[in-house]
Image 1 (cartoon, helix red, strand yellow):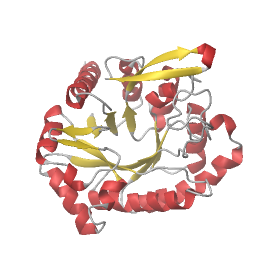
Image 2 (cartoon, rainbow, N blue to C red; image 1 turned 90 degrees about the horizontal axis):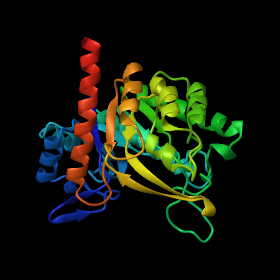
Image 3 (tube, rainbow, N blue to C red; image 1 turned 60 degrees about the vertical axis):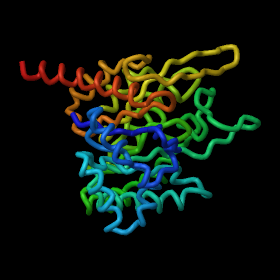
Image 4 (cartoon, rainbow, N blue to C red; image 1 turned 30 degrees about the vertical axis):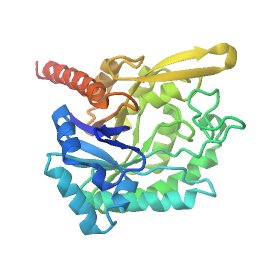
Length: 309
């Protein structure tokens, strides 16, 4: 198995940086060496980083080559955003196509995106994770939403196919694809060999105050159509009297999602993409994320040993 670092914190003394607004210069020699030492093979890099390289083919390739000097690839280019919302959809479609172009130049395997809309909750600014509703989620959708999204993704897949790139849609809250059934529906409508889903089980747990389905059901259904895989873990604390849950991020070893079960399901489906570990948001990311990748590697090794027996 290959491991991609979807880091969500970018702090290594003396730098304290916002992981969602990085520049290429943030990938310092010390940071890259530390990530390689943890055992990762590749990075998930946001399109905003590649835009800031200068955006030309030589600029993007130059950045990819710098990571390669440390034994690290650009495994995934992250784009995302709603594709059908009138206000933001056109710009997000353009971003997705630009991400595919960058991925081709960088040698990345996949472009991943969550089709989530900007969050709107009256009087409650900020995160919606754990509210009783997943804004613009599958519970609210009619069939024509998916029928409108499918041609956009078909075009993206056709463009991506020309440069050897896959397209993945992430199962994510505040998007039409937030459950296994909605992911399967969209996958069938897109019907492209280089299209798949990212069965992010953390988002399934996170999506509603009471999860719509258990993560074991989700991974068994989606493993056969997965082409990229975000992995994170959480503890859920439910307040039923308020119809509200709060979630605490923890390493893969410590949360409520059974990743031994999930890895087994992915292995049985002959999954060959990256296992992308979403890193810690706070605290010592290197300690926490080292725990996660060590745990994941041990389970994959057990599976491989069983397969060879």
